[in-house]
Amino acid sequence: MYPKGNLFVPATHGRLEAILKEPAGERLGLGLVCHPHPLGGGTMHNKVVFRSAAGLLDAGLTTLRFNFRGVGASTGVHAEIEGGQEDVRAALDYLAGEYPGEDITLAGFSFGSRTGMEVGMADGRVKRLISIGTPVEKYSDYNFLTAVAKPILFVHGDKDEFCSVESLRTLTDQIAHAEVVIFENCGHFFDEHLNELRETIRTWTERELSRR
Image (tube, rainbow, N blue to C red; front, side):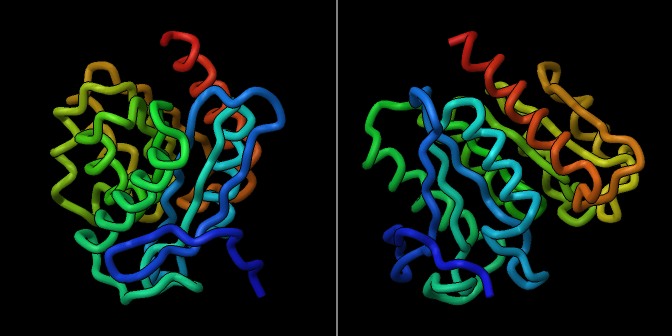
């Protein structure tokens, strides 16, 4: 049985169950992490989401992760990309309301990448993006990201079951400033690479924060 969230975020369909954690030291900004596909068992407790959020916390960000609609104690029913994007906007609105004026780093894993990246690249409150296990082969409309002007990190496994490195490169090669980190002998869920994932996110985020 997964633990319950420690707060609820207002949403158009009611509320989103969420967990908010503060960094151990000084807060340097805000982080948001979006989980994988709800119909595939994705929740905010997914191990990749948990480690990604930990990496943002390590970098000094107050970090929120949430359950998309229809997952856990979140209200509503799953509504694919459109519904997921509405939920991402609700989570961003919550963070901006609680911590006005602070910039946000948005990370998304798999379905969370597809929903989060499109919302985040267009939202002025989001200053940097992290796409994890980017499922380019599942969603053929990822080309919207070629127009992204914000710092963006892609973290991927060379044995990802849902997107080959070659398919990922068809996207990232069109983004001149994209940083791409490929883990060797690593599948979609980053088994045996979770600590490395956390450290990669921490290091990249700290570096990008220092450039403000």
